[in-house]
Every structure is written in structure tokens, then in C-alpha cells.
Length: 427
Figure 1: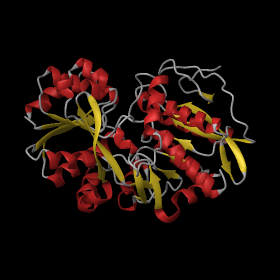
Figure 2 (figure 1 turned 45 degrees about the vertical axis):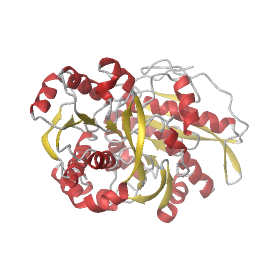
Figure 3 (figure 1 turned 180 degrees about the vertical axis):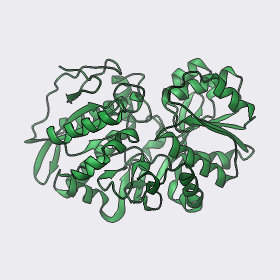
Figure 4 (figure 1 turned 90 degrees about the vertical axis):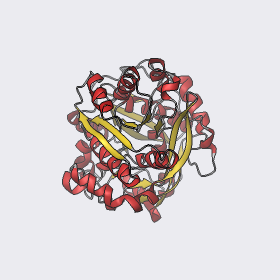
């Protein structure tokens, strides 16, 4: 047995979890496949951003276990078992690059899953040079130079538009917004998108600021937000710990209005610190996968309810926004490998993008992005709008991102440029 340690890798078959900092992974008997294909996982498993890495690794374990138990993946007449090889990059650039080099050059993986932002940007040049297929949950990492980087699942920050659109249609009396988030490679493009979304719906930003990643006291930040007397508080794509503390301060300082944010991870804990009444009506973008709306015919994440039941039974209290996302990417990769008749990155990428269409987790989608990212490497279609109802995350709508883009692209590009987040500004 081995343990994940900071900056260290481990051979990952199908384990059980003990904690977010370190857990053991006992050997599990695999199927009878003739060959093995290795999948790289290079994301934060410990550190400040572990909440958007480790739960995703848990989801990959479940996906791989089920695949191997069913006999593996048949590619060009050869059957493969899947082996996960993970590296904890702690969301640090130097460790992300070290992890990428080990996974690609030493472990021989065929795709590398990444969170995106700090880690994907640090590895992009290396991945392109070595023609290694990699993924990000942050499409704003994309540029014309990142030809081997794809965003086939999460379309951050574009999907945040769907929550704003729903709010504007269903609560037109809400006119003013106070917004904050952390100042980093995830927060900045998200702020740009929210600014554009509020602008095209006619909602006014009366407070709009960033806070430092080292912030621990959110009382003065919330005081400043509430001083602007907003109808809506927006916490943007703040990290889970920040979302927790911002909600707690809003509750303690007596806020009774509407809140919107990208995620609301581990909301039962937030509810314990506040109340069910306080969180009622909160709008965000990530459902629990026991939602019956995930059984609609267009959904491509099959057996979502069963996946959620198994995940929460194995890893209680750890379900969040990324728990299913890396696994959804692996399902797309599997389909493309079967179609290509190869597990090698080039033919898999070609098969994945063939015809410009793809089966996104939430329905049919198109490979898009040239107008905003300089390359059509993001799979964009519908995305759920989630509302807290009676203490439970509930899908209220699947928002149409391409339709929104057509009316908001000028405003979006303007705000991305103002923050220096367009691909030609970053490169």
C-alpha cells in the first residue's frame, strides 16, 4: 500500500478514502483484459484547492472500477484495463509541471486530467510539445497554442451565465448586485463573465471587488458588500472554503436577500452554520446527482443516480462540484478511443472532435471557443441551473449557453479584455 503525499505520485487502482490529506489504496483485482492503459491525474489532492481535486479522483476510481469489472475497454480488437496514476500538484505551478513530466515521460499515460488554471497553464507548453492529450475544467486556459488541451466537461465560466439568466427572468425585481471573489486564474475570468451576464440582463453591479487568496477574515468584506445595499450577493467562483465563510458572514450580518454563486459545495455544512431558511433560493450551477432531472433522455452521464449513491456511500461528506466531472471526461475519452481504434493521443483527439459535435454530460454539444478562447476545444451546450429548495439542491432548468452567447458575446469579450483574460492578452 502507499499514500498520496504532497508533491508525490502514487499508482492508483481502486481505493477507499481516509482523509483529504492522505489515504490508502489497496490492490483490487482487475478484469481479464490483455493490456493496460494508464490515465494520468495531475491535480491538487492536498492543499488549499484540494476540494476541487480529491473528490474528482474519487469519482475516477469508481468509473475505472466499474469499467475494469465489466471487462475493460475494447480498442481495435484489444481489451485494456484502465490504471489511474495520480500526482498531487497542490495547485502549484512547479509541482504541476513536475507531475506532468513524470506522468508522461515515466508512467506512459495516454491522457492527463487537470483541474485547470494554475496547473493547466503551467503544463500547456510541455503537453503541446509532447503531443499529449490533456483536459481542463477551466476553458479560459485554452488558446490557439494549446492544441492538445481540451475542455470536454466543465465550461467555466460560461455556464455561470445560465444562473444569471434564470434569476433575471424569474425575479425581475432584483436590480442590484454586490460581487466578490479571489484574485487568481479562476476568479478573474469568472468575474469577467458575471459582469457581462449582469450587464446584458440590466442588473447593476454596486460593489465589485477581489480579495487576496490569503484572506481569512471575511467580516469586513461582507460589511463592505452589504453597505452597497444590494438585492443580490454574488460570490462568483470562489473556492469552497471562501464560499463557506462568505455565507456565514452574510448570515451573521443579517442578510436576507438572494445569493448566487458558481458552486455551493458541501452545503449541508453551510446550512449547519446558517439555516435552511437562509440558503433557500440560493442559485448555483452544480447539482447533486440524485436529482431526477438527470434521468432525462438527453443526459449522457448514464446512471447518474446510481453513481451518486455509490459515491456518497464510499466517500460520505465529500460530494461536490468536481466529484463527477473528471469521470465524465474519462467516459468521453473511452468513447473516442473505441471510435479511433487506438488509445494514442492523436487519434483519440481526432475522434473526440470529429464532426465538431460531442456528447456532453448534460446533452448534445458542439466543439466551440474560437471567438473567446482562440480555439474550438471546449464542448459547449446546455448546463443546469440549480436552486436550493427545502434544504436540497434542485435542478430548475437546463440553460442554453450557445443562445446566450449570441446576445452577450460583445459584452463578454469587452469584460475579458478589461481584465486581461483574452487568450491573446495572456499569451
